[in-house]
Image (tube, rainbow, N blue to C red):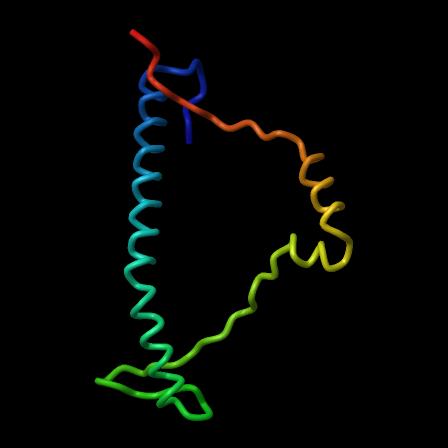
Length: 108
């Protein structure tokens, strides 16, 4: 939590460092997801092929199975089904602008 009092140069530099680290972590996460995806598809195909009616199998000492969780419907898709594309566009354009922090080095 930020300390009370006037904004310091150190806090700005800390914000920039944290922002860069967060972005790097996001890039790493996306790269790992992309690398994992073909393996996920291969394991899913194996489960579909060998899993039987319970959708579970054991291979090399690992239980391979499909888990289930409630999926999240796209609010936009569902809204369009109930209303229209035009109404969805109207709502998106009417949404207020949201401020976010941008910190860049000042020109010397």
